[in-house]
Amino acid sequence: MSEGKEPERGRGQLPSDRDDDPLDAAFAAARATAPAVAPLSSDLSARLIADALEAMPVQSVSPRRADHVRRFGILSWLRFGVSWPAASGLAACAALGVWVGAAPPDFVDAVSGSLLSELGLEDPLAAIRVDNLSDAFDLASFDE
Amino acid sequence: MDREAALLVAYARGDRAAAQALVERLAPRLVAMATRILGDATEAEDVTQEAMLRLWRYAPAWRAGEARVSTWVTRVALNLATDRLRRRRTTGLDDAFGPAGEPQDCRRSVMAEMHVAERAAALRAALTELPERQAQAVALRHIEGLSNPEIGELMGIGVEAVESLTARGRRALKAKLAGRRAALSLEDGDE
Image: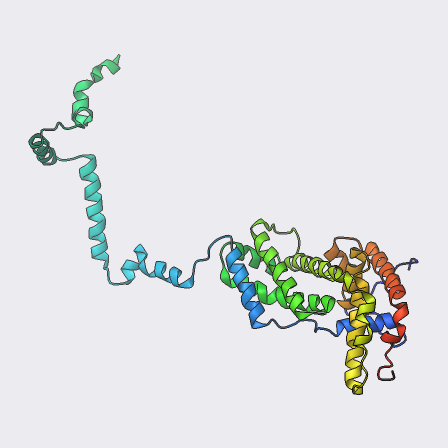
């Protein structure tokens, strides 16, 4: 051991508390102040948790809210009374709506045209309809 | 990643249970350490609360492998405790052993308890007069009972430096307490 340094001891191997050494007796007295692990008071525990929740960078999702999401999510409908046929019907209606919007049949044009004329308006989309585009462009010009 | 680091990451993502688990795993040891250093349970709880609060605030920036969470928060609590101890300097050794504190007519067991409390108070008062790093090393070695490598990890220094700090700290404490040998004597009840 080099001069001026204390020998290494393992954890728990404290210097002996010799009765004739007041310093070691004082160390022993300080160690006796509290056990190795002190139980938390309920007040301190509550304060620590309150601090933790207040400082939490992401607001926690409470178990109640998570349960609500689980119970009322789309897939949960199937578990709670909405049958597969009903779900299939809903999907078919959605698909029909998309189709009517993208490629409206003639009767849709007739209905919407009469409504617009009654209101004294012109169809704003008429110029860009696919059937009108064929008139606007001479596709034969691309053959050259 | 150690268990506490995983809990801290979970806490940063909003996991309340992780906060509860971290409190249960870390806080009791912090309270005990701060109580032994400060000799005051209320102050020890304040130190623990402040150390844990700093941990919560640091959680989003925590990087795996940076340090062990328990080491990090213990280091913070140690610094806070020694800071408080050093702010007591105005008390001094003489006040810790003032005549008003001398028991006159007590039973032997009560006298023994008082002697223990006096010794601890004298030691803490003497620690306040040491350079901060010496005081920390001595407290960790002789009050907390940590090994030199453990102290080195906590203080961010090598084992040789720990040995040097504790040796110099002990010598300084002996010198400061030399004048109070009678008060520190274990021959309680004879006065």
